[in-house]
Image (cartoon, rainbow over all chains, first blue to last red; front, side, top):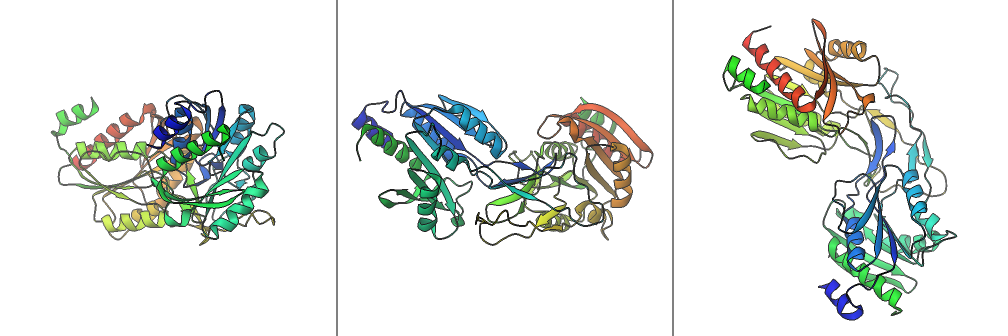
Length: 227
Length: 227
């Protein structure tokens, strides 16, 4: 219905000729050849956004972490495992007009051991963490920054304050913020606040599919010049 | 073909009246509400074994970590996330005649933080690991120990030595050992050594499905008294 409304307002392919970069899913940071640090991102939201942007006419490059999802029609998918691989794939995908960074990128990686860590009776191994590159901030401050950079924020409290600070720090135009303390991961529903320079906008509890279509509509209006 | 051979030798349901406990998949150990330590086990081997044992007539309880697999026909499935949940589900499933512990249980868990860990500029958070319960050893030395306890070993070197030591230490009758340095995780193939009291037996490179059927056949022969 939303896509039909967009089509009625802007024509069927309002984003034709635009290139959109979308990231989705978690990253897995290896601890050793069998273990990794992951997170509960299912990739559903990012894949739905990639599909909605493609449906709106954009050429879409989807950089996906390890997820169990089919590639949406008309979308070019690049599979990666780690944050550093995701960053490299995003850089390689530029230039883009639109970047929607939905992936739940690991903030930290471990110093990966070359062989499987074994229990040797001396207690757990120390796990030394190192900060990963900040992919959203890298895109938001890039020399070839897309015209519209949208980040996602998963928060467990102080949603609007954290997401507003994140928008400025990362150089993003918009932040789609959702409270993951409510069981969003893997679910088809989410409760979203869209944070723009104008402040927060409560989208309420919304199916991830509808968030994707609404966001694609906002992006189409942005490029059309409508505020 | 193997199941047909078993059926020809022992009748169509050689394990009728037997209860088999099977574990499969990884465990996920929470770091905070969004992050976890996982491993690359897909659950395919354990699910195939559960299916083969059910096809051989056993009543099968399958305790599964987080995987994306359909429950095999005739199998009772219990989904768990962490090693401690898996241990509790296994204990609750006893008594059993057969235990086949295929799951890649996390050796260590983190002290989980109640809220999402944030980057605060002071560097990565310390990640304190604690040893998890050893589910195979617990079953292998249990007061209600199943008559046949089979463990799995994923090794990246010294396969037979490590697996033979594991067999004795865990109180298992057999260990199915495979070298995970060869890209076994998520694959449909594996290279297996069956370690029994008589020593190692090289099954060679084998599809996971065939490992499952061959193992079910061995279990059927074991309960039939054939060496």
